[in-house]
Image (cartoon, rainbow, N blue to C red; front, side, top):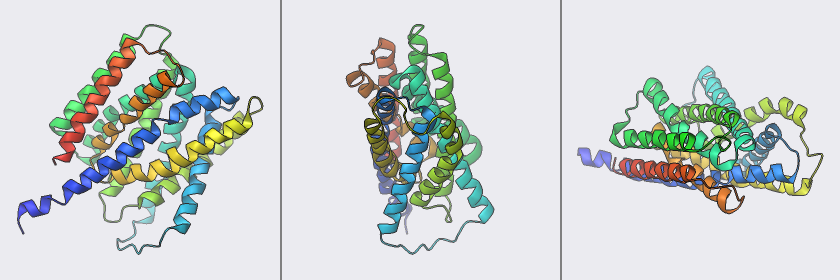
Length: 311
């Protein structure tokens, strides 16, 4: 069997992974706008929003898993200790990622919070993938990360005082750290023959995240006491169905087919989508720095997607 025959099957797998990540990025791009609509409809806080999203996504994924055809899994089961560490790590990372992001949206707005979170995520992921997974960036990855750094610099330094809230920046960086952890763990399990199924990984992560968030969400308030509760939970239902139950399995499936840095940078589709919705729907002001940062970030996605498709 020739070398070219061995390489060809990896190309469609990488392209499928890029397709899954594209759909995920577009769905996640609406998350910040939906959270802002929840805040405008009542007094529900970020802990409660994150808890309901985790719980709703878990219930829907459990229902889908019960209805889908059963598949016989050939791969051997992972050791119990390693599996527990994987599921616990993804659950904690998911809870930190989402909750800190919702808090950042409340502090500094949808566009800035999303651009900061998903712009710094690839940098943290690139460092982690190099140190923990032994992955090389390559030329395309280096260009993409450089584009992310440049875009972040334009976004933060180009906006004047009052546009970017310091607390929002800190929360966005915390969210990015949780996101990088989830990305690296998803890639690590995808490389093993006994790795977790994307649906199983997603369900466990949301179950653990919901358990971790229940107590702080209870103290914050699980139900709105003012405003329009029907509208509030209608938007939360959207978050659970489209940005959670649909998007996360696609994300883990895509992350298992491409490098960790590639998956992280591809998710820059999310901040670009979020910035557009923030300006067009939520009427947030669009500064020159925000627009320039979004353009640079989008360019980094294109460069990396082309490089990954040719691997």
